[in-house]
Length: 398
Image 1 (tube, helix red, strand yellow):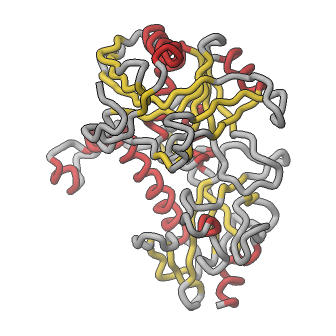
Image 2: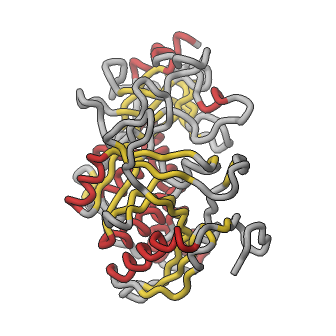
Image 3: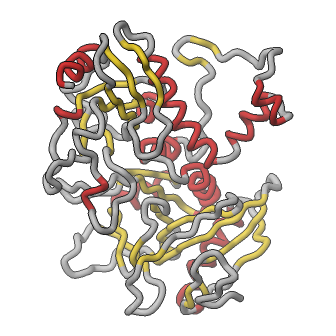
């Protein structure tokens, strides 16, 4: 058994109370059994995180690395009464440095960050990518009403409640009972690194998203006799290449982002007056550059909307970078000078590759970070489906 500080493992291992943590590990084992899985190997309850490999009823072998904690709703001073929480608590009390939640680069193990109530027989999963790195001895909270949804439906998701007016990142949390634990593992495997809009879309489908074979009235054609050059290079059929992408969450995540940008480029190239429309492949740059009616270069950033709209029905964009510099928390947010136009991809809501557009110069300023834009963006009256007027205004400002 590996000990804390054992450098033979690629992640930190912490000594924990076996007696105290045993119910968490037992819940996971029992949940896998309920889902028809057979545990092949499991680390013990005396060290965390738990590493478990198992085989499904269909013979698929999978593994999880579980950062698992007790979820409860005990009364806590200065905390709401209608709240459950769990505390990320490994290591000694002086150990407040940042901890990275490990992700298997080979995709053999799926990382889960989960609060479990063994007595009430439910779990709630938070986004392990969004929370890495994290400090220990912090709490993650969710509402009683979410637990009610979980126990009633056996699978539920929602956006985690944020403080009013907060610029914190939106986070989609999921929850279930023992019967849906395998769905949870598949969901986290599929959703790893996804933006929160598509994380919610996947949660809606319990981690399995099969799009319509009819896209905007155009049926998807079967594989043609012509074989793409890439398929020839790989010595695979075109269907096998697509199956490979579909079966590898990291590949699909990367491809999905490029697909959103590619659909946008193709749409923009059809707009009268737009020329030199190209994707920008450099890191930390806007997604697209173009000219409109002979203007200087204009820059467009493509962002996905969230699954849940505002109460008035307006789509929402969680408009910020995933990470910020340790020395400058405001670096998480964009400025109006980073690009000219923000394009909101509506796929996470409509499940179609549709877009709306706004000038960055007309978006709300950040309340605390001077010169930055608010991360809480609503697709309201400032936005247009027809980009020509937006580009005309942007071109006059260059």
